[in-house]
Image (cartoon, rainbow, N blue to C red; front, side, top):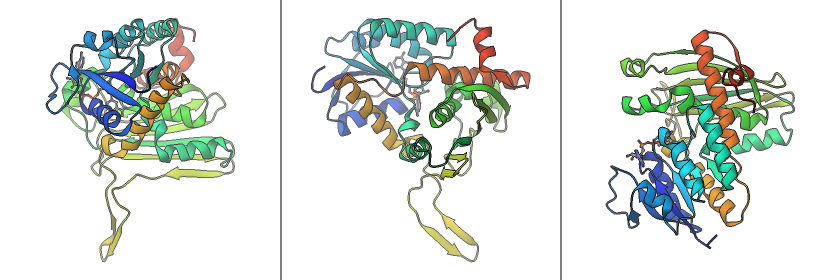
Length: 338
Ligand SMILES: NC(=O)c1ccc[n+]([C@@H]2O[C@H](COP(=O)([O-])OP(=O)(O)OC[C@H]3O[C@@H](n4cnc5c(N)ncnc54)[C@H](O)[C@@H]3O)[C@@H](O)[C@H]2O)c1
C-alpha cells in the first residue's frame, strides 16, 4: 500500500460528496484520483472522471468507495473484489440475503477488505454510551431505546429503489442496537403505519414504525422510527441496565435556552444526517484508510451487513404477518445456516 492510499469513488450524490470532500480536504493519508457518476456535475472537481469500469480497473486505484444507489452495491463490490481492490461500501450491502452471502463469500475468497458505512458507530455520543456499557458502568444492559426520525421522506424515485424503510433507514438502528449490546438478536416484533401520504403508499412502503428486538439473553431493544418529524432529525439513544442508565440527546447547532413568558426555547436539532453525522463520516473514513495502510481489520464489515439485514427482513415479515418473527425462522425460510 502506498503512503497515500489511492482511491476511486463511485456515485457522487449526497453521501458520495461527503466522502469525497472528507478525503480530499481532511484525510491526507488518502487521495481520490478518479470518480464515476452518470449524471453528476463535476465542475470544480480536479480529478479524473470515468465509467465504473474505469474506476475499478484503474491500475493506481487501491480502494473503491461505493456511494451509488443500493441496487448497484453487490455488483460493484464483486467487481472490485475480483480486481483486488479494497472496498468501502455504503449501507445496505444488498436487499437480498442470498446475494449478500454470495458477495461476502467472493470477498472472502479474494482477501480484500470490505468496510460497511454504518457511520453511527463512529458518532462521539454513541461511542460514549458504548464505552460506558462495555466498562460495566450501567451494569448488565437490559433495555436499549433508539429514537430515529427523519425530518422528511426521500423522493419517490429514491423510495422505490431503497428496499423499504426497514432495509434503508432502520438498518442503521438495527446495527446500533447490536453494536451497543454486543449481542445477537433472536426475535423481532414490528408494527408499522403510513401517515405521510400517497408517495409512500405508491412505493408500497411505510413511514412510521415501532420495533422490539429480543436478544439472545432476553435483553431488549425498542426502536421507534418516523420518516417525518416536523422539528427535524431526531436521533436519541438510551441504555438502561442493572446499575444505571445512560442516554444522549440530539445535537443542536448551539446550546442556548431562551426563557420568556411563553416558555423555554432552544434550537432545533441539527437538520439531517449530513449535518448531524458530519464527524462520524470523517472518523469512519479515517479508520478505513488507516486499516489499509496498516493492514489491520476494519471494525464494521460484511457480517454486520448480513446480521442487520436479517433483522430488517424479520421486521418486514413481522409487519406483514402481525406477529413476532425469529431470526432462525428467516434463516430457515431462505435455507441458510450462518
Ligand atoms: N451512511 C449513511 O448515512 C447514508 C446516507 C445516505 C445514503 N446512504 C446510502 O448511500 C447510497 C447513495 O445514497 P445517496 O443518498 O447519496 O443517493 P443520491 O441519489 O444522492 O446519489 C447517488 C448517486 O449515484 C449516481 N448513480 C446512479 N447510478 C449509478 C451507477 N450505476 N454508477 C455510479 N453512480 C451512479 C447518481 O447519479 C447519484 O449522483 C445509498 O445506498 C444509500 O442507502 C448512506
